[in-house]
Image 1 (cartoon, rainbow, N blue to C red):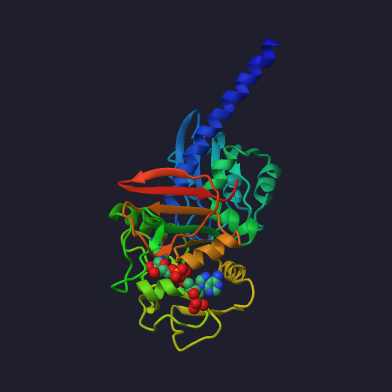
Image 2 (spheres, rainbow, N blue to C red; image 1 turned 45 degrees about the vertical axis):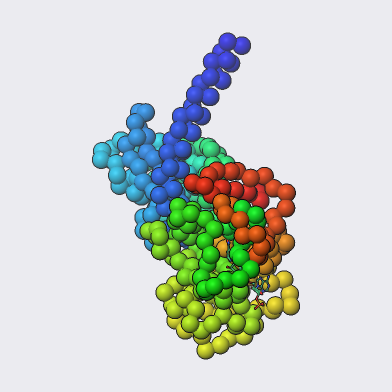
Length: 361
Ligand SMILES: NC(=O)c1ccc[n+]([C@@H]2O[C@H](COP(=O)([O-])OP(=O)(O)OC[C@H]3O[C@@H](n4cnc5c(N)ncnc54)[C@H](OP(=O)(O)O)[C@@H]3O)[C@@H](O)[C@H]2O)c1
C-alpha cells in the first residue's frame, strides 16, 4: 500500500510538471492569434534537467513552425539528446510549406515528446505521433487537452465540423435596442464606450472574416476593418441578395477583400470584391457557411444587424455570442436579437456590460 501511495504521488507530480510546460506552450502559441491562418496556433518548449532551454511559437503560415523556432533558440544543441520537447499540438508529419517537424525531432535525437492534443487536420491526425513512436521516442499525449482545444477552437471547428467558428457580436442599449428607429446620418449610433469599441477592433484582427446584412451597410456605411488595433483586417462578407448596397459603400472600396452573397453578379465585381451566387429560396445561412468553408475561412465574427444575427441563431449556427449592454436607453428602435436562455460570463468595460455565452461544451 505504502509503495502504491508513493507511486501515485510520483505520477501526480509528473503530470503537474507536464501541465506547467504545456501551459507555457499555450501562452506562447497565443502570440499568433490572428496571424497563423490557415495554420493553427502552436507553442513549444524544450526542457533539460528542469530548465527551459528553448522556446518558440508559430507566427505565420509559410514561416517556421513552433518546434523549429524552439530548437533554433537552444544555445547548446548537444543538450537536445537528453531533453524533453513540449508542444501544444501534435507535430506535423507531412511536407507542407515547411518540412515535417517530426523529422526535426527525430534528426535531433530528442528522446521525449509531450503533446497537448492530436491535430484534427486529416493530413496529420495521429500520423505525427505514430512516426515519433516508430522512431523510438517516448511520447505522452493529452496534457491539458481541453485548454489546447480551446486555444485552437477555430482550427478544430473548421476541421471537425467542416465550417468556420462563428461568433455573434452586437451592442444593445440599456433597454434592449441595437439601433434607434430614426437615424440622422448614415453612420452607426454608438451604444458603447471607446474602450469597448477598441476591443471589438482587436477581436476583428483575431477572426478571418466579418459578416453583416444588407441593411447595416445601407444604414451605417461601415468600414468593417480593424483601424483601432494593430493587426490584419478580416475579409468583409455581406448578405445582399438583390444587390441593394450602394456602389460607393466603404466596404466596396477594395481596401479589404469583400465577399457579397447575392442572387446575381453586378458591375461592382472588381479586384477584392467577389460575388458568391446562392439560392435564397433555400437554407441561406447553411449555404453561406458552406461557401465560407470552401473559401478556407476558419472564423467569422457576425456583427449584425438584428435580422442577420437572428437567422444564425435560428439555424443554431453559432459558437459564441458577445453582447455589449450600454448605459443609455433608446426607448424605441430595432430590438436586439433573441438568443434564448443561455448562461453568460459577465464583466464590465467601464460602464458597459459585456456578456459572453458559448454554444458548445
Ligand atoms: N448595435 C449593433 O451592434 C448593431 C450592429 C449592426 C447593425 N446595427 C443596426 O442594425 C440595423 C439593421 O438591422 P436589420 O435587422 O434591419 O438588418 P440587417 O440584418 O443588417 O440586414 C437585413 C438584410 O440582410 C439580408 N439578410 C440578412 N439575413 C438574411 C438571411 N438569413 N437570408 C437572406 N437575406 C438576409 C436581407 O437583405 P434583403 O432584404 O436585401 O434580402 C435583409 O433584409 C441598422 O440600423 C444598424 O445600425 C446595430
